[in-house]
Length: 428
Image 1 (cartoon, rainbow, N blue to C red):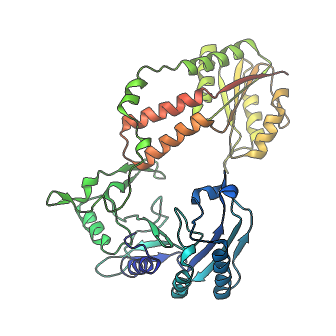
Image 2: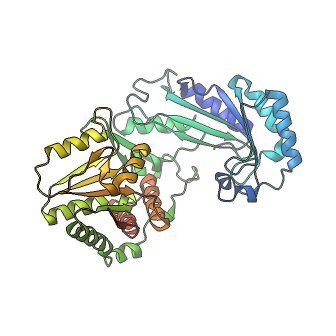
């Protein structure tokens, strides 16, 4: 943030909301006060581990006194729990934003508990959706909100000894032209954080009108003054995660890697389908492992039609059992492949299919002898593929990787997933 102390940070937030933004959808009406206690033992392997080490300045007596003071000033906590997510104590109060001064006074009285390497044991938080204002008239600008854009403008702030905030701005303009750049530069005068021109995306509707294509803008879009960018990238304190970017050496080595593991998986699938006609074939692996593509290639090699049915259904679809009956009813009797693509979104149906698949009777529907049954089940990524998938996601979200680097990361994640595929024949 531009200011770190809770009072100065809150003054910056209030100025931003008075001059440049207006909270909407009944958000921003409360300030939260959170008190959490944890230890290295309780936090190990739990979400609390992300809070860092317990600050040495805050004794347990200080923490307990802060909790009592919060209860005296703000009443019973709205939320209270023990031994949750690695926290030994967790209590939350919601205070009307009109009592912001009371919250700031409270934080002043518990200074040893408002410090921490990541999150302080006691801190206040604020969050709101907002619409941007015309900086000249003060009126909110038209064409804003979730009905028009895939995201909405949000402000989130944590008030503690070293306060911090996040600002997501959705600019209601069509193109990132000079007028938009001028608006952003003017907005910086009122924003509680330093805006970074490297982190602006341009969203354009795809042909279907329902999805959007995202393009990360080059930092030069903001314009220059005297050869320098009009917004200083160093002030934001944001550093791209270098470990997500492939090195030249990694990219060069990629040319020497082959798809041998995928071919091995494919051969196992194709041979099983050729040799075992009445046995259910199960393929397990991460979503990125190309299970369906293996079956499609095997069907083409065996010259068999392929029928695919997913266990998840939308509101207009037939039920799983009815679609299965429809496929069997239309079947011409020639050898064919039936692929059941088990989806994460339907655990009840999944459980029934996985329990019944060996017997080739699914939800009361018998699979004919001439249909070879394949069940593709998504599994959680292992350590290797999980790390590769996460790296690719971070690089994509950061927005600095080139298309060639993103493609390299996609291949790396795919290769890692191929090594985690299991092909199993179930005895009838």
